Image (spheres, rainbow, N blue to C red):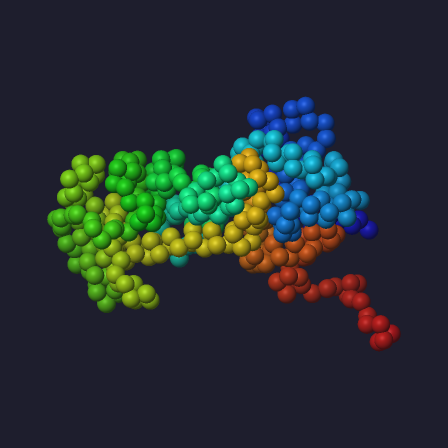
Length: 389
């Protein structure tokens, strides 16, 4: 009877390796490399992400313990701490960033019909950033402030499937507003933005590119009401107005009308004010859409808890970026497999199962079915208890 490959190898079989090789050639990642290729490096880092390895020494020790199975996992070279450390320092991180973009496109195609609970066909994005604290003595290139170091992950999340479509890594001192300049705005899409990004010049650029934004207003907003529309106050709407900016600078950099929606957040007992350039959706829909922005906060919390992006296997900027992009690739790969197999397992449970079964030779579909408690063994697989014979 043919035995299946290891669970880890079955997961890696979903990788589009021809596209990976294109990325390697684009940045000459394997130029003059005789052993320990970029693919070997990627597989080692992916293994570390899936099994929660703490350090390079930890990764090498676990892989060497399964030396006879490494070839069948796709790792063709001898794994050593020096090889892996040197690869993290020297191999261009853009190889893995470009490869992640390939998986992003694949994942978005799979999740494009995902139900968000709102009757809207437009693409909906949430944009925000999170800070990862680092030790200044080990990461001096990431100086933040007051003897601290850190980096920021600026992320644009497609809410259908929670797919990160854009990730921009900067040092902790970079103003969040600058990351908005890096976005390629998609016409017709909705951008849900935290009020920390309230900059009318940048918002007007989004408006000019025929996209929609929804953002919370600040308390010192200077505006003049021009139109008021009736609202149903029994559903916690306070007002729905068309306004013009009256600030000496804001009225120049955003000369068009804006829509202002006031909503009472009953759960937290607070009044929220939203600004948008969309005048077609209902006021209640505007409030419900902005509530979806919280998914990007949940995404940040999830990756920090379940992926290795808070402690790093190298201290250089290249090593840190490589590890972050590898972590994002693992996240996307698991999301793709979850959709293809039709499993109902949450991503967290999926990774937990893989972390303890990575070297087991069991069909992946069967493993995921057993993890949901739906698997029932056939008669041929039933093992009798020892003392019942």
